[in-house]
Amino acid sequence: MTAATWDIFVGALLILMAMSGSLLKTLPMSAAALYLLIGYMVGPSVLGWWQLQIHADARWVELICEATVLISLFAVGLRLQVRTSWNSWRLPVALATVAMVITIAVVMGVGLALQWSTASALLLAAILAPTDPVLASDVQVQHEKDNDELRFGLTAEGGLNDGTAFPMVLLALGLVGLHGLGTGGIRWIALDVVWAITGGLALGWSCGAAATRLMLYLQSQKQQAMGMESFLALGLIAVTYGIAVQAHVYGFLAVFVAGLSMRYVQREADAEARRQSDEKPQPDPSLVATARTANLMTREVLGFAKELEKFVELAAMLVIGCLLRPAMFTSRNLLLAAALLAVARPLSVYITTYWGRWAPSQRRLAAWFGIRGVGSVYYLAYAVTHGADSGGSDGIADAVLVAVSVSVFLHGISATPLMSLYRAAVRHRKQ
Image 1 (tube, helix red, strand yellow):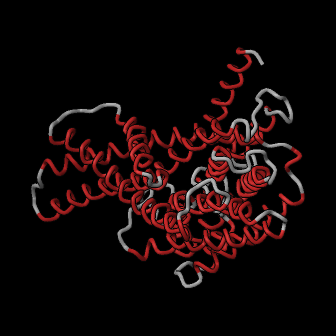
Image 2 (spheres, rainbow, N blue to C red; image 1 turned 90 degrees about the vertical axis):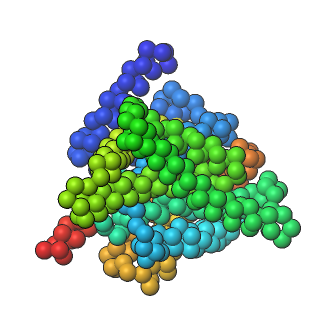
């Protein structure tokens, strides 16, 4: 493939991405599914323009998926409504922890029944456990004022469980001697569970709040126009993730919480300005200016992050499509994908939300929308670069890629019509 042909191909993809909003209204699939199909077409299985293999190119796959998940998590955190009530977070936290553990147990059991070893079955289940924040745009909150409980729950779950899945991946790697667990698993519990999760939450909140308050201080108090506020997103993501890696805490979790923290600071500035307006005929001009600056800054940062999110989604799905091979779609791998989507996910959601405040229709939708995607491929590439399934003998990579591709197409086809019906039903109930 010549350089000119690549130029044409890349340019056509970018034009397609720009037109996807209107084009996909006429197609029965999501943008992610379309990009995945294009990736498959240009990969070794059809045109052969791009030769990519998960075991030979695991490091590149890991980097592309890592960047995609980080940008998506930050954007998700920034557009998620900040809720201070524990009742609002109880179900999302339960979905990201209890439901994920149930999913791992069910998928691991299926893996053992399909003749995977114990360590391989656990690794496979841990890789497939987290739902994906990148591909779930149709079922996520649309903006920070979106009060819908189902969309909030699914969005928060996707933001949290890309970090909470990491301990299980490390446990599986430890069982095959590729990660230190310590005597009786003490090191794993202390460092990989307690420290890495709590540290990631604390670090993300601190970084997001500190960066946002600094920008607000410089712009509203010192009248220093920063300019290029959009690139604050990239800087905050990079700094937060870099510190998280150095501190051995979960960077995915930290970046998600950093976005959430930025939104919280903006909301606090808004609330303080409103209180002043209600209490005084002439509120403090500096508070009004800070609130206005905070709103403008978060809007600019979120807009940039969302556009960047679309670009990296395109790149990641092309890569995943190129990794697919027809030989991967064996009866064993298809059976595992069916068990994940039709058994493990619904079972875990119904058990976790049974005593919650979701309506039956919300539980049904949550049970179906356990989208698997870029996050799972990242964990797969991470495991391969650390020596797991390096020769492909266990077939973990094939099983993961099949499950992801099946999820992308099934959920991509069903997300828009099902969520449209759900929104219509919600509007009808409010009338």
